Image (cartoon, rainbow, N blue to C red; front, side, top):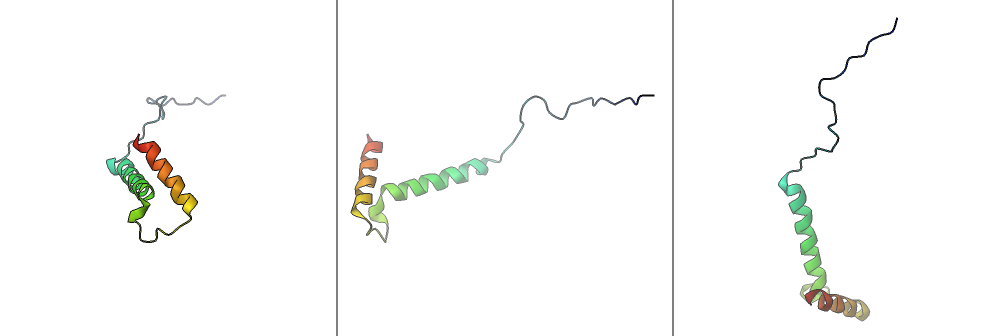
Length: 68
């Protein structure tokens, strides 16, 4: 005798991913990225801005390219 399998009335997956994130799960990483990017683009505001002149020149060129 074979055993009958029961079918679920609603399948576990509906063919797509249903993930709900809170608003801060996207806002906080975005805010952190913007703050760090602002610190990189304006190294004159940093306390320890005495670095390699080549790095400062590279960052200055990046800032000029982004501001266009």
